[in-house]
Length: 320
Image (tube, rainbow, N blue to C red):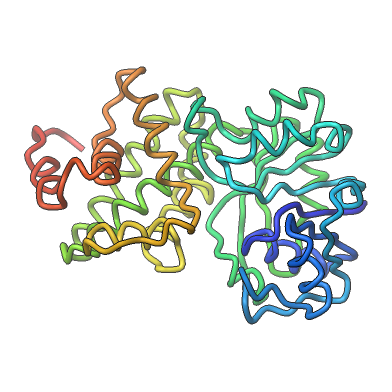
């Protein structure tokens, strides 16, 4: 079965490199000049410098050609997924579609699989998520991910097809839990980055990660997800990675906030939009999610780090 990856950012390119070890893979780049350059130089110097593209990987800007594959990985940002799918729905029908973005849509509060189902209700859909940095995958370093698919048979087939020498996939049917874990860990990574950027220390970060994990579970359970899913790769695993490394764009944004520095607005940070979407949803459901609320206030510059710290420390004492 053939595979294409739509989206030539760092993560899409890294996935294509790894999957090309199994056989021919097509990588679609929106920009025609970039596609020609990547095909000729065998490098993605814009997004993933230093990683060589294997000969079994073909780069193209021809979307019709790229969507001829049986399985298509959608490595596009969460906030642009709806427009991409709605524009190209005719090309995506009758394919197995694997969303590779993490986040919650700001306007609707929906996750990637819900968005896909809205435009392609008969498509076989899945979500690939979990602790993974593009640079590690591209280098061939061992990485474990969650493949979330409601249909067990489709999930098992995709698990076999997309597992590579360095990518080990674990399967779940709890798509809601996988979506929420992958989305909310980005919010907590912003918070942890702010803590370290402000010089509040590793102990404070550990406390924030733990209480952030409690918020993730709270939202997941309220959405009908399984608690065990959040304890896996798509929840706890991804939280651990993104809250402790500057390879995470969300963590780097938090660092900039904590240091009162300007952050490059051209860098996509999924956690910023997700924080606002989740905060609105939490308010609508009357869910207590103080860290998420603090992150939104920091993003909107309604609170300083000192004020945010004081608010969290002044919360009522309770049992863990």
